[in-house]
Structures are given as structure tokens and as C-alpha cells.
Image 1 (cartoon, rainbow, N blue to C red):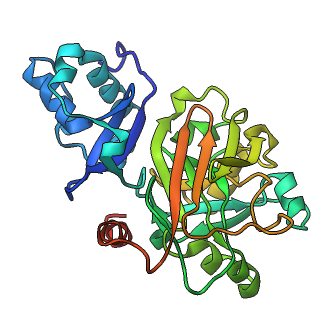
Image 2 (cartoon, rainbow, N blue to C red):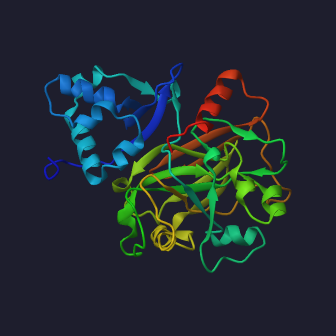
Image 3 (cartoon, rainbow, N blue to C red):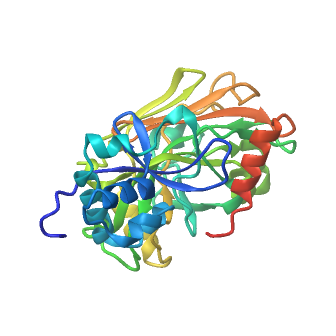
Length: 334
């Protein structure tokens, strides 16, 4: 099957239907999101062959961990389903589901000052080597989930970033081979408490507070992106474009970053690298523009999509949203 399957690029999401705690693996089909497991069961019921694991697939990692074969088997499923079969499957509009983080990584690494103009706007020099830091597990959040303004900071900023999702274990890989280790790409907002970032002398707390790493909404498989170093990237605040650049302006390319990191840090399937933000963040504007309750942040990258998050005070969450946010923070599977 692997040799004859047309492998189509796909967009994968993790989600729950509203009012349910059951996690689902979704695939975007046109303007709707379909439950992969439900789709697989419908196709099998029609008499078509379906890989066994797809019948119970609920996580992006279920696909990633199977490597190329997993993508081929998912593609075979999508190629097999037709209009009649799709009608038998629950298809959800995006506003009818609750997105979860696009993947649950074992670690989130991020790159500081990887666009020269962003380094300069902050008063620094472009780095001579990648500036690597970590986003903590509790920071992971999702599309349409709230960014919670903490009580311990008054200078919260946004950073639009392209996120790389690793597809297989990468240890001491070459730059020439690095992109072969990529499963796909997503969007991240590297939310930052600038006062803590500067006061602490290192970035762990300023970058790692709760909900400070929205990731999603989908993971777009690598096949969809012909040249990852030629994508328009934008950050928006309340519908106004504040950051607008191109990934061609990265100081260190995605391939270089993967190779560089892997020389001493083994990258595992599902791990995420946030590749840096371009100029135009709020803190370095005159006067500074800082996030406040009611603001809406968006990250856009062409061919990948839009990540949207509303800003709320930590004590302003309604019970449903608070419960959903807490469930994200309490996940233990990653």
C-alpha cells in the first residue's frame, strides 16, 4: 500500500467537541474538521481496508510516531472516503469544537532574536549563534484558548512565530539532512512577560508562565510547504497587523536550527521548536503597546493558517473556560 498511495498533505488537530472531555484527532477536510477515528470506522464499514490503529487514533503523536507509514496510511484513508462516506461521519465547523494544543511535545525549545530587525528593535545585536531557551510545559495552550494575564507582571507582550514539529528522533544530524526530520509546521505565540524577562537575568519565568505558549490550530505536514524559508509571517493585535515579515529573513534557517540543537539535545518525535519572531512586537514600540484584557492576538503564516487567542485577566475566566484551561495544564501524557 505504501508504494501505491498518493500521499496528500494534511492538517491535523487535536480537539474536543464542546461539552465533552473526549480528545479526538481531527483532519481538516475543506472547511470542516473530521474525527479521524470516526472516519476510519465509517470507511471500514463500507468494506474498504483501513489501518487498524486509525480506528482508535486520538492524538497527533499517533501519526507522528508511525513515521512515513503513518502519513501514507492516513492518506489512504482520506483517498478512500468519498461523498457518501463523508456524509456518514460527523464533520465539525471549527467554531463548534474546542481546539487542544496541536501536539503534546516532550519539550518546547525556542529561539531568541532570530530575525535581525527584532534583535535591533530591542537594542541588541543579531546573535552570532542561535539563542536557545525553553518554554515550560505549563505554558502550552491552544487555538482560541485564553492568554491569562498574570498578577506578577504588568508588561505582557506577543511574538508571532513559526513552530517546527519534529517527526523522528534527531541526534547529531547534518544541516543537509535536517528537514527530513520534520513532521510538519504549526503556529505559536511566544507570549512574554518583559519585566520578568529583564529582571530575572534569564528567560525561564518571563517566557514560561501559564498559557504563554499557544500552539496550533493545526499541524500542517511538511509536504504542504515547498520552501519553509519563504513564508509570509504576521502578528496581529485586535485585527491590526503589527508584525509582517518573511521566514527568508531568519538569521538561522530551520535546517540549521535543527542541526545545531541536535548536536547536544536529542529531539524526539513531537518536539517543538519555535523559530523566532520578526520585528514589530509591542514592548519596543513608542509608546509601548502591552496586552490588556479584551485584546485578541493572532499569528498568521501563509499555507499554515491563523492562531487566535483572546487576552483575559487570570481571575476573569468564566467557569467553562477556566476548567478547559486547567485541563490543558494538568495533562500528564507528555
